[in-house]
Image (cartoon, rainbow, N blue to C red; front, side, top):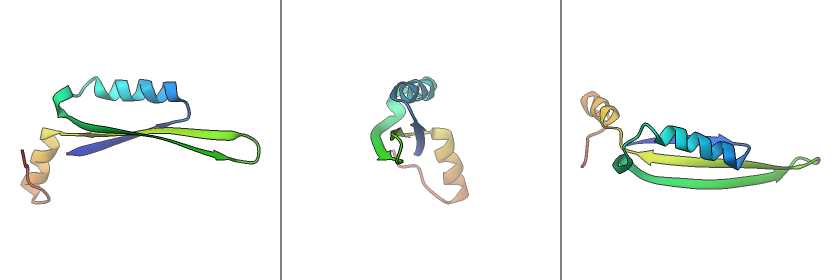
Length: 75
């Protein structure tokens, strides 16, 4: 299993980045997507950070970890 974390300053940019990343992944390998918005004030303006964490299965990565002894594939 792997994760991809994407963060952007604009929600439309995050949407584009997430869709671009998901384009190459088989939908059945996506485990979950977590979304978060953070905001803070820097004494001049309100700043927003939009982020997403995509949790997905990557069989090639799982096989590498399995052969290295760091992890085992559990399906």
